[in-house]
Image (cartoon, rainbow, N blue to C red):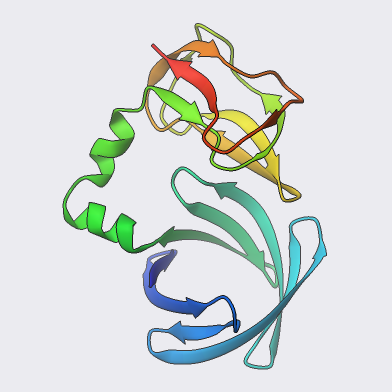
Amino acid sequence: MYNVKISDKTFNVEFDNNKLEGKIDDEKFIIDIIQTANDRYHLLKNNKSYNVDIIDVDLETKKVSIKINKHTYEVEIKDDIDILLDNLGMSSVVSKIAKDIKAPMPGMLTDILVKSGDTIKEGDILLVLEAMKMENNIKSPVDAVIKSIEVKKGTSVEKNEILILFE
């Protein structure tokens, strides 16, 4: 189960990846989706057609900016663990103790936007990681000073590989 927040409205979503069907707030749906270009998809949901463009993905905060048929939406996705951490009041504690940035997935580091000694703020874009033909902006989870950059632009990284260390 996922909580999906779009603008100010939250939906409970259950999804079966194997069958491309599920429920949104107890309403059943069936989808068919194909990738038509880099970050662009065509989606059929219950026989209605949608063009979907992925504008930005923030893996740290699990927020996605998408454009569906000329309308742009900010989407926040929380799984069961995120919901539990929120209910226990631990979600903000986890992000505030970060001492490094690790690769959230394997990919190619296409840009490094900071250098050692830079003072950064929570939410600043630090790196750009290309994975599965999508560019992912890696943002800082905390206010910090960059201690060191552990990777070079243009190199491949593995999941959980340390990219940046904070002081």
